[in-house]
Image 1: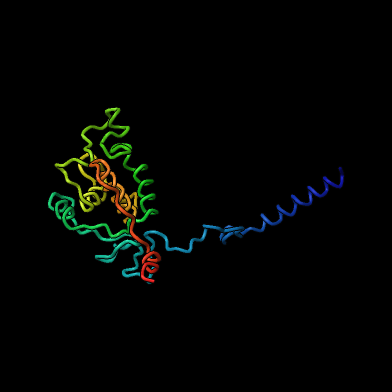
Image 2 (image 1 turned 90 degrees about the vertical axis):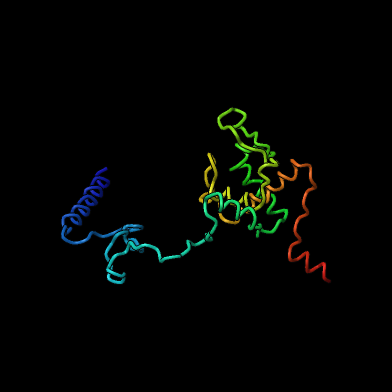
Length: 204
């Protein structure tokens, strides 16, 4: 017990000696500094290497965020009609993409539009949302372009999903919506696109 007490007193003495010599006018020692000294520039900090010494600057005009593509169709009736007529789905219609589109649809769309795309989703049946049309509505005559445009910009009470899905994911959902439309109309299912490997085998 005496030896343990002596060790404890000695340990406390060492700590006291180290802290008593600390100079408050100088930086302290850092143990695992982690994010105390960030590598990046501080927001709104002043640095000589930047124009006018200001770190926070507006993006270069017409610059595009990484991972996103510009969309030139405006959020109005003219933009909708133009997209409906011109836009075509650039993403291959493969079984893998079909399954991905189905998963995304169940997450973002089925609650209102229904599993079958008939406008009878869970929220509609509980009368939380009204007026959701079926995908086979002849008056709307949706196309790949109109579907993508609406998902991108939103329409009426439906908000935009451009911030929640990537450009490719928006097109995957578009593929699946068009399949639901075909199913509601009693049409035949589309055949999946051949992959590059399949095409190369077909030419051999």
